[in-house]
Amino acid sequence: MTSVVTPYLTLAAILFCIGLCGALSKRNGVIVLLSIELMLNAVNLNLVAFAKMGAQPALTGQVFSLFTITVAAAEAAVGVAILIALYRNKGTGNVDEMNSMKH
Image 1 (cartoon, one colour):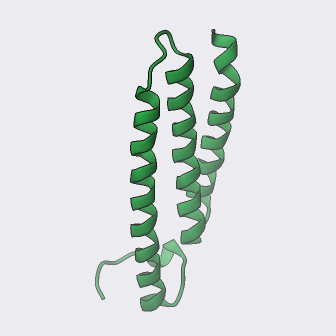
Image 2 (spheres, one colour):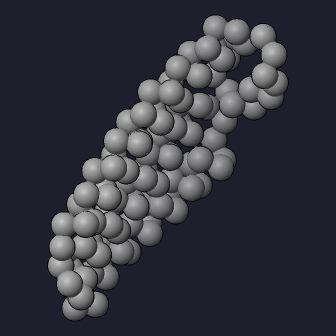
Image 3 (cartoon, rainbow, N blue to C red):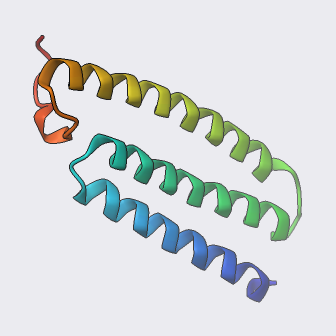
C-alpha cells in the first residue's frame, strides 16, 4: 500500500518545495500568489492520495480538497485586489513596497 502512494507524496513534496521557494524568494506579488497556489495544490494532492489509498478509503479527502480549492479562490481574489491597490498607490507590484497601512 505504501509503494502505491509514494509517487503521489513525492510529487506533492516537490510541488510544495517549489512553491515555498517561490513564495519566500520572489518580490513580485503575482509570483508570490502563484507560489501559494502551488503549495495549496500540493496539499490537495496529499489529501486526495491519503483519502483514496489510505487504510479506509473514503471521500473525506476530496471534500477537504474542495474546501481548500474554495479558500484558494477567495485568497487569490483578495490577493489580486490588494495587489491592484498597491499598484495604484505605489506604482509597483513588489511586495517589498507594501510596508505600511497608511494611504
